[in-house]
Amino acid sequence: MPHVHLDTPTGPIELNYSIATPTDPYSATIVSHLPCILFLHSGYSGQEAFESQFCDPRLRGQFNLIGVDMRGYGLTKGHIKQETYCPIDSADDVYRFLKTLDLPPMHIFGLAIGSCVGLELATKHPELVRSLTLCSPLPATEPEEIASGRLEVFNLWVQAFNHDGRGSPGGDSATLEDITLGIQQLCFNNERTTLTDALSKNSLVTATQNRAGSPQGVKDSYQATVGWFLQRQPQSREALAKIQCSVRLIHCDDDVAYSVQYAEELEDQLRDAGITDVELFEVPGPHYGSVVNPQAINPILLEHALSASNGIGSSLLMQGHHNQHAAGKCKKMTTPFTTRLAVYGYDPNEDEDDFDEC
Image (tube, rainbow, N blue to C red; front, side, top):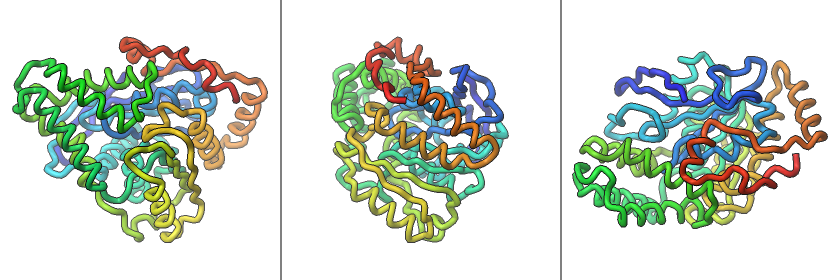
């Protein structure tokens, strides 16, 4: 997957990204006449968390799908040098990415704190955002008990590498297993599939490469897994009023960390700021519902992005969607992540009926 060099206020980074088009999961460029959906991941996993969206022919047939790895995640290169790292910094990285590659305005799909990054982008650069679909959006500030859990996971990470980041390169296996189990409980409610297991294993490998082995790695780990969440700031009414697009909020009913109350509060805040086209959906699933229940979440994203693609070619998009529906072309597609996840046991054919209804 390609990298793009970005000059940021805290130094250069090499941002890793993927572009999947209707015909090419490893494309170097977008298909110019199709709109784009940009996927913004949350903690503990990079852009590969969107395997269930990139493999969906209903999405891939209508859009360019673009993923990025935030700092400290996936294959992005560069340390987190900010003393306080938060979604504002991530949104600035995304903005620089879009401008450097001269990409058009995007539909945004944000997962958990990726939703915060999407909101920041839409308030700072509303001209670049065509729609916001926010899955498991977080509250304005992190609840104390969740913050304590994230700090506990970080402390275990430090312990796994002998506290100073200079322990065994592989870390202590028993401690790392405890970390993995805690993360799986938060993200998936311990629901086990070959995809959730592969995501967990892949994330552990990349985290070890990115955030272990040195004191700087430990600092990056804190910022990527704790500071990123704790240091986010509430959006003011004036900031939210700058959003120029429709918003769809998705709450996953089995989320063990965040209740529907937080999504309802965000819905109220957006309406109070004058954003009239806002809708909240409740679907079954854990915090990372987009991973394990794409059957419920992908259609919300698809219909929202189609309805908001009101520029050139939108009528062709809608016609293509209806034709695809009639033809029932629902076979899963290869993604930029399929081969990598398969190394860790992912079977893309495990749930062949995921997209039975096109």
